[in-house]
Image (cartoon, rainbow, N blue to C red):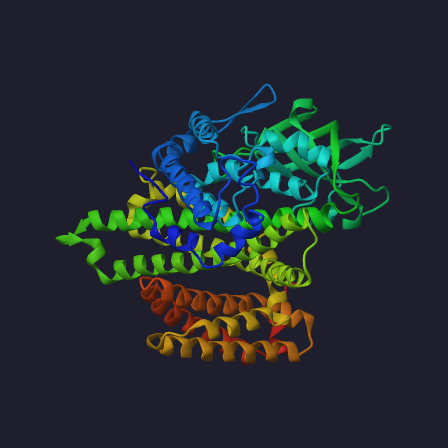
Length: 568
């Protein structure tokens, strides 16, 4: 029997990170619910044991059911019958298994039927599910919407809708429109208040909506007349039971084919306002998108892990010239670099997840009592880090994922181009990760703030202080040189006081920062687990040359060269 949790020791390593004790204590209100719920933990060790056991169940379901069904789901896909999405047979089996195991809504509070798990094990489960089938992770992972409802909706809405998630309700976030893709400020779907003052009617079209036939949808709509920007948008909850939305079609996609991507027509669809008017995009969708981007980070790591294992397995079994191809330097170097990149992106994934976890845990505490001044300051720090690390994670993990699956195909040779092996599906599934929930280019726009404000630089300096093992000093010095080089490069660009110049070099600057941060994270991880030292060595040596190249390019760049790149 396969288990996608127990066969990956990195997951238990990150689950036992020292910060987890603080996260769980906050999440569990100092374990105050142990007398109210018989399944609430009594202390940190008990909570961690619960996380471990549930992740083991998820790992078993993913290894024995979800992964086994993945190829058939890819071939069959969902169907639209009588205005209803019918999932592929394998997807239905997956949902049944997850539901029967009680694994929906695991991060929701116990009062709504959830397990009150923190974000780290939830993200970990998303990685595991994505390794089994990226398309199914989109259906399962959209329970992120429940987090948004819990965080911002009224008590009335929360009490009515949140208990449905642990019972297996599916969710969707209906944001994109035909003329409003990346530019969500251009959303035009109209929301009109009903005379009762409580409900609204939605009219318009949404496009590219993942899991568009979900039980519960969060819909971004224009609630304020005569507005054209973000200040006129609000967030609404639509219940599919009202049957007021027509599914125009299911898109025929390159990959993640088991996940239905729908075009929806809203016609006087009844809806409930989530939170305050005018805050739909400015506050609520930003929070929702950050959660989704964290989810894509986990999905990217999961897909990359699956591709790496397929490549290693094939290379170990495939013989050419009298020996297995994994023994040839051209192949074993490629596969080793794939594994190193996965270690690096996973270190960034769980660092980001911990930042998000602490911030959200403080929000939950604040709903019960007033935070102390030191707690408020602590939360501000973690919120800042979560906001600036999330786009960095989404950018790097999705790009690495595509590179790793590309190399996995290459290891398979011509066989990998055929549909006989899973890497062909993984290659198609991976491509969307750098596009949806904000393209890589948009992640750079968000992440460049971490460069220009010095947040990434300060993080590098803080990480540097944590490297205390003498045997790692030579790697620490390499990172210090890279950090000084990065600071010099940033200062050169900022000194020009030219917005266009910053934008032009922003991706290089963000990638330089990401390389250094992941190098530090791997080195820090190797202090707790020596197995990471090899990855730290290879990764740091590799990105050192990458950063050197970007440094030289930027330092020698003349603004007059910009015109060579322009088309208008």
